[in-house]
Image 1: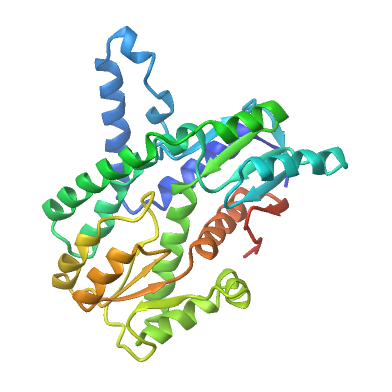
Image 2: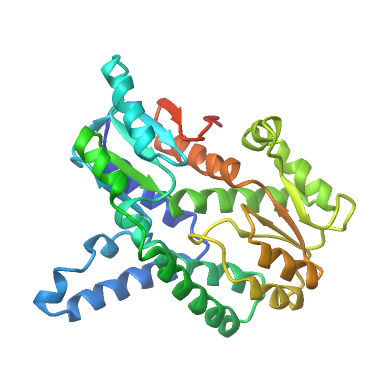
Amino acid sequence: MMDMQLQKIYEKAVELGMKNDPRPAKEVERFLQNEKKKFEKLEKKEREFFDSERLTNPFADSRILFGDPKTEVKKIAVGIDLEAAELLLVSELNRGGAKIDAAFSHHPEGIALARLADVMKIQEEMYEEVGVSPNVIEKLMDKEVARVNRGIHPINHQKNVNVARLLGIPYICTHTVADNLVFRFTQKLMAEKKPRTVGDVMDILLDEPEFAASAKLGVPPLAFVGGRESKAGRVTVTGFTGGTSGSADIYESMKHAGVGTEIAMHMKPEARKAAEKHHINVVVAGHIASDSLGMNLLIDELDIAEVVEVGGFTRFSRK
C-alpha cells in the first residue's frame, strides 16, 4: 500500500459504508439531500451548530475525531474500543520506534458518540426488507431513538478525544460504516449457504476466522433462543447495523413477516424474552468478533497493510 492521507481513508470508508448500506442508494442520497435542505433553511446563528459532515456523510457515528486530515498514514493501530489506555499504549509504542501514524477505533467517541442515535433509523430499512410494516417499525424506532438519545446525552463524549489531542495522535472511528460491511457479508453468506437448522447457522459463522478465534477464547456464537436442532426457517441478519440494539417489541411483527431465525451481534434480555415469546430463534454471533469482521473487511478494502492490533481487535485478511 502507498501512504494515504487520513482524509482519503475517511472518505473511502464512508463511500464503502454507503455502498453496503441496508437502504437503497436513492434513500441514502435522499437523506443527504434532506440534510442539505435543513442546512439551507437555518439562520446564520443556527448554522454555527450544524455538523457540516452530515452534508456528505450519512453516518453520524463515523468521523475523524482529531488530527490533520492531510496526515500521511501508512501504519495504524486498530481497536474495537480504542480509548485512553489504548491511545497511551500507541504513544508508548511510538516512543519505542513503532511509527504508528493514526489510531483507528470501531466504536465511536466524541461527536460520533454524541450523535450515535442518528444512525438508528437505518434499522427501519432492514426490517421493512424482511416484511415488517413500515409504519410499525417507524413508530417503534422513534421511541427507541429517543430513549438512546436520553441515555447518551450525559456521557463524557470528549474524554478520549482529549487524550488523543494531548498525545498528538490522529484519531478516527468508523462504527456504522464497518457494521454495514459485516451486515452485507453475513447476509450474503447465509443466502449462499442456506442453513437448515440453528446449528447450521452457528457452524457457518464458525467457518469465518473471527468467530473461530473468538470461540477458542471462550466466546462462540450462541443460540440465545432455540437449540442446535431447531429449524432455522427464514434467516435474517437484522441485528448487525444501525448504531445499537433496536426495539424489543419488533419480534411480534417479525413473526408475522415469516422470520424463523435472527442473527444478531448482541441481545438485550428483554429482546430475548420477546423473541422467545414469539418463537423466533436468535443466534448471537458475538459482539467483538462481529465488529472485528467488519473492521477486517474495511481494512481489506482500504488496502492498509501495516496494522497494530489493540483494543480487542484481531486482524484477518481476506486478500
